[in-house]
Image (cartoon, rainbow, N blue to C red):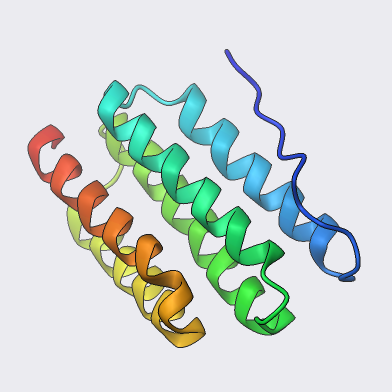
Length: 127
């Protein structure tokens, strides 16, 4: 089992410690899952993109927290799906929520939306 740490969350925001902890939890959940290596890679990309959003000083703490909360739920559901413990409609709804939260922060989150779309494609093949 590989534990992941996120060391590039910048200080200066009260919520950064909580965000960093949730991001690390999300990444560790995926690393421990039975997911296909391509899916794990896409999920790592997603986590790194959201880490980048957490560091973007142009975004409000509330916007970043909303995206991060949805990432946390999405990674939990993806990990469950790869174990056969969850169904597609739930993770699709969660992915939609993550995409909508990313859209709300603006153009800077375009890579997040593209990665979520890629992950959904990988899950469709895997499930």
